Image (tube, rainbow, N blue to C red; front, side, top):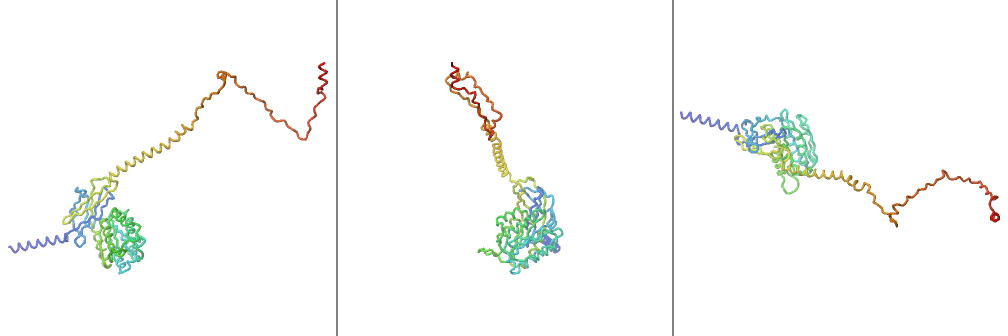
Length: 408
């Protein structure tokens, strides 16, 4: 009897252990990979569950997840099983600088990218960007795996490394897209040709709303100057800022395995949906905590967009002050001409003039001056040139003795 009891107990214990191993495959790591706020206040949270080896855990029940926003438990309106989160949009960003031709790195990169494309599900879309000194979009987002494979084979190593600019271009491709968005970056060196700086791309990565998975291949940077070798510090910072991961391999033959593992993780995520209790676009960051059995908590922060209230108040006050000053200046411009016209343009009253005379009274009573109008002949007499004037008649002119005769 005791033997049967011990055998039954041992069998139950083995079943329990086997079940736990099958369920959790050891400790489970939860990671929030993306928070989609495009339909705010509806929030969609993408969660990756992986085991100790980095493989996806697919058997968590949707009801097992719990979510909090700013410490308040949220009621999930929807929760999917692993792999049912919807289509995935991915941009493959591949370094084709001159150093990638060494040690089979370019061949390994092409094989890895091709393996990722072959694992695409119906509805998934992938784009391809190559970069050296310049940035080339070899293939926009598409479901056409044949076109993607053909584009991958066109990559030829040359030039320098404009890695930051390539990531910015990938962000531009994914900005108008909804749903799950990811960037997979592969490089063997340090950025030495981008227009964007390190701080600018890190800031953009944190605000992009997508996850960036970075991979380094080849020798690591020595930190003794120069731009040779994988810059692990930057690649880790990019992944951390965007809820992605960083992977490194010195041997390009391992790239295929890394890409396949990453594809499985992205395609087998869970999606949790809830309504935020604060529906204001107030610009204030909000904290999300996701938990599940046998897994450590995962935390992430999202921003609903908009303007922070304090900043908005200061901005509004500054706007009103500026408006008042502008209005005062406008009124001054409008009324200044009228005021000047009234003070300068109007004729002034004539001043009284006093005429000094010997007798002021007589001056007042003096007769008015007569105005004589002289008749002006209608036309001047004509003078005829060449004609002599008739001689005066002197026969009737009085003579001196005629005057004497008249006296007597």
